[in-house]
Length: 249
Image 1 (cartoon, rainbow, N blue to C red):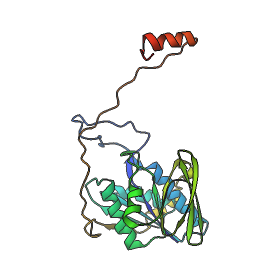
Image 2: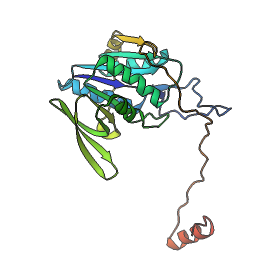
Image 3: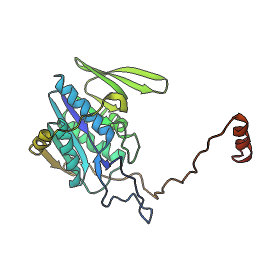
Image 4: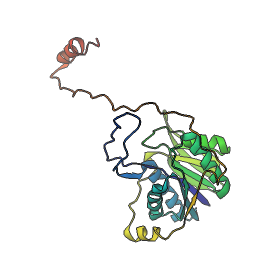
């Protein structure tokens, strides 16, 4: 089984995000970047499938400028076999990303495609579903458990009412949720080995895809500051504050 894992370069989740002075976007100057946490979970799941003998190759793919090679090398250090960078200086939206991934799927012919359910920067939660629609492949989103079988994979999904298990015929698409696994740390020997693993660089033009934005970013604002909460001694004081201060009753 060949597993294709899509990964994204995002601002490290420990970094406090700053908005540019003109509010045109988030300021990325001198900001630590990292592998999207949900993508780390996707890589970990693919590597575990390989360790179980279910998968024989784990291929990573990312879209962006040369800097994304850092995150691809991180994924290779975690256990990926080879990587593909789709080089573009534009920041494609979810639909453009899905079209690019569709082209890679058609080229690589993977049995299983694993993506994080969302990126922590745009927070759209769209790409996996769009890729499923474009390729016609069955999909299991918000996966908290993935159990492969002969020619199929069972995915336990986290839904509003609890858990739902779906059986997908391969090839299929899975998007990962937080409770699927806990990603490992890359060891120093594996980090050194990752530098020698193959990394192919291609472009949207090579894949026959024209990257066009269908969503326009108008303005970015920091969240409004909220006042701190207070403790109340009893129900009477709570009702009094809700009535006279908050004026909600």
